[in-house]
Amino acid sequence: MKLMGVDTRARIRKIIVYAIYIILLSSLQVSFPDKMSFAGQTADLMFVFVVLAGYFNGFWDGAVVGFVSGLVRDVFSPPAVIGLDGDVRVTAFIGALTLFSAGIIGSAFFTKRMHRNIPFSIVAVIFVTVCYKTAGYVLIYGWSSLAGAESSLYTPLTAFVYSFLPQLLLNTLAAIPLIFLLRFLGPVSFKNNAKQDEVIDKQGGGTWLGI
Image (cartoon, rainbow, N blue to C red; front, side):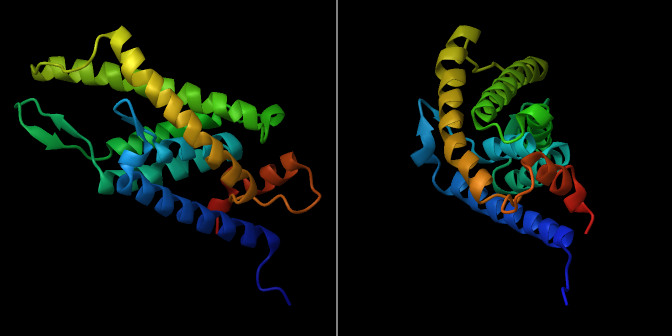
């Protein structure tokens, strides 16, 4: 007699696997930043993982995994900004909002025709990284101007060369092992003979949330 159906096991598998990856990657991110840095930028493992989760497994996976990962980031390393009074203040929920958005944008590349398309998943990582860096540059510049503080940002061209390009390179390199981990040791099992689209339709799309 089976205690759990196939769907229930698949949902539990998703939650456990996602939890393991979130804990592992967030720990690596804050423990060994110097080992993953180049030209002043650091490979953003959590960001890349969230984008790929959304790309491979759909909107709800990207949104939920992104939000939870962002909360973990806010606990480990919340960003600091200059307040309107000129004092440096620690922010809250910036990480959650950022990674939540990254997961949703990553899921925009999730279509029937592109299920498990590994080469195109790298394009998704590059695209979302560009969106992230551009939005961050604009927001920091705007907030610094609003706070009346002198901005330490590069000019757009210098930022592209010394900030955007190194981050794109590092995130692309980080995506390669994460892609294969999600494909072969990920939250969705492809052991059966069912078509991949059918497996993702059955186990993706947020159905794993309804335990």
